[in-house]
Length: 268
Image 1 (cartoon, rainbow, N blue to C red):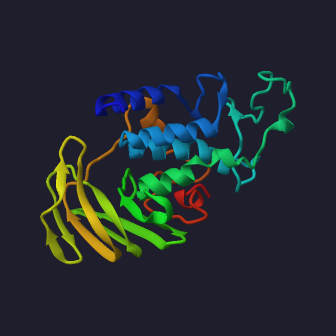
Image 2: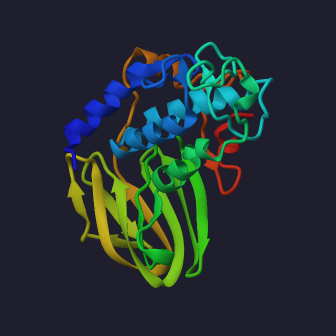
């Protein structure tokens, strides 16, 4: 695996492909491909650049969901940098037949998985969730809530960011074990179910503290710490991270997502 510096360098380079309505695909010039952008989003999150990942979601998926000529509900297969829907026209035998482009493309829904497993941070590590991890990334959001159901039971989590730190609550089946990886730009004070925790391992270079071998059930974690800022970089990012066509809004303060996860980003 690459080291942390390489992760950041890759994330920094990727945003050079960004335009006003999405990330242009280097392998397919003049085209924007949400399937490929979905992998880019996860790359930014692997580099702990959550604000940058959220900016690309708003930039591309937000543009399409607000487009009066789109479906306003499903996700398109691809589109051109000028905003027309002639994805791959002239590239692979489609000619000028723009009707070939799918406007309900399951492979274009990468943000759903990314928001659940990276931003909410709830990951099922082994089959059925016998082991799990909760590793939230805040970006520019202040609260997130979501969950899953498996044969083992229900897994749910919620986090809320405040001025002095943040709170994380989660519920997982009692016969499971897991790990918390909590954002911490400085050494934090942690309370788990009202009791002080001293067993956490703080990684100052990554800005996280890890609590391992945790049991199932319903739990609440209070963290007093300076929250790490994962701000997007480069001029193109700052210009687009708060732009959502037709909404007039400049920032999304919270998300609730289970099924309609993208809608909760404020795209409507």
